[in-house]
Length: 124
Image 1: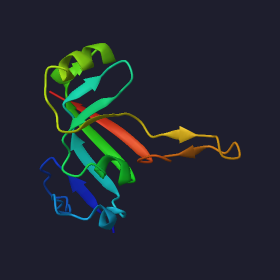
Image 2: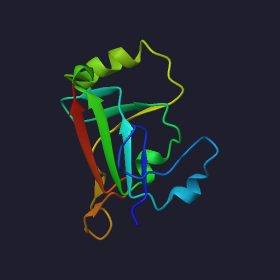
Image 3: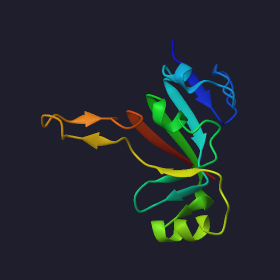
Image 4: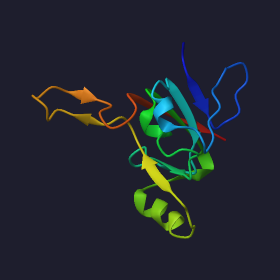
C-alpha cells in the first residue's frame, strides 16, 4: 500500500497525517510526499521549501513532488537569494532532482541522499 503525505489539500487520495509530534523514524515507508515551494529557480530547477512540518519529509520519501506558483519562479539563484535575504525563516532548503553518485565501485546510485525521483509542478 502506498503511503502518501501532502501539505496541499487533495481530493480522492488518502494521505497520512503528520504533525510536529510525529516520529520521523515511523515515516521511513513514505512512498510519495507533495510539498509546496515558495520560490522556483529556472536555471537549475531548484525549489525553495521553507519551514516544512518535519524537516526529513523531502529526503525520506521515495518520490517527491514539489508544487510552485509560476509567478514565484525566478531566473537564477542570485535572484532567489535576494528574495530569501529579505525574509526570516526558521528553516529552509533548496531541493532539486535526485542525488546521484558513482563513487562506490563506479556503480551509479540514484537517490543516495534523498528521494529516488523528484517532479516539479508549476501552476498559475
